[in-house]
Image (cartoon, rainbow, N blue to C red; front, side, top):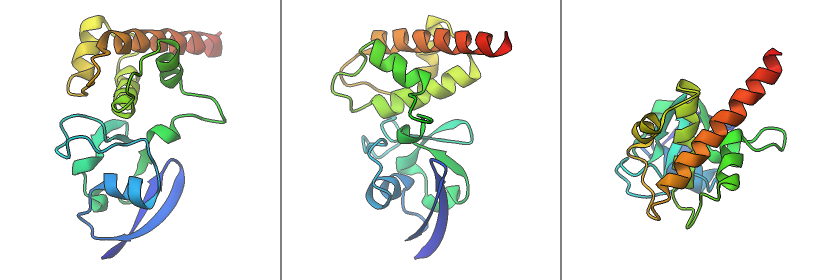
Length: 162
């Protein structure tokens, strides 16, 4: 066992764990965060996605020791000052969730997609979201939500730059 310091959602946590323990287990079991989900356990479905260094990372296959001291953002950490992130709000506005199981991975992957490409085409959205699976097949709603979030973010940037 080792003491590992984690920076999760702008809070510091020291956990005493086996260094190879998957980050997902620490987030859910030790830090009581319910955003990241256990899906496949192989890093293939995206339900466990978290943001680390501006990248969407599969926490089920990420050893906790490999992210010590890095800024980790979960779904719970996206909202700021009581305001939902534009991607989260677009998900609500487009009524994306059905069962809700994949939404963590979908939203966080979309967040990274939009950070890298603020105005993606339909093909770029499909490519950027590839590998983040939805059991309910709400892919068209997901695409619509990403486009809505892109418009909202662009409008906010125009206001700031005006």
